[in-house]
Length: 156
Image 1: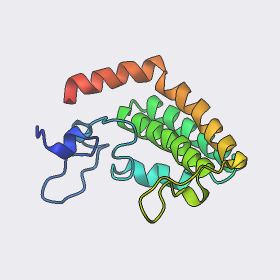
Image 2: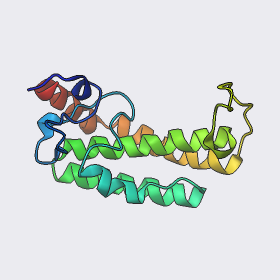
Image 3: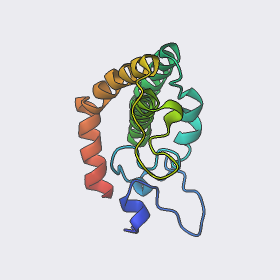
Image 4: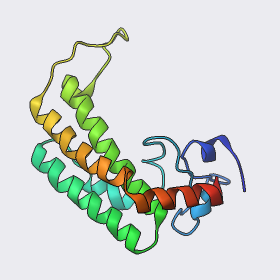
């Protein structure tokens, strides 16, 4: 088992530039911190990304519920990597909506690298709150936490 930097940071371990299918090879998946690897781990990225939306509270509500349903479907199929990837997309829904709620266009820094003044967009803040509620639900799920520890014990 490789202990490459990529494997340790939540990215799937890849050999010779090939994309590793983490469903077939869960041993290549590292949980990582936060949202690390969310846009690189296949086939989950391809399955989850089309359902990830946060522009309006209605989008956030529908998206967070679809991603939660996918989290539960991965659980039913005993697919921890899928569960964790769904959790990451839900978390990313919260963080991105929050960024857009605080800064127009989602840009925190100006062209000089200085932090821009916050201008709260209440609609995006509501979207962030919708995702946050679901994110807390999945990240504190006892079965998810048990599976996460088991995966980390088995694969690092």
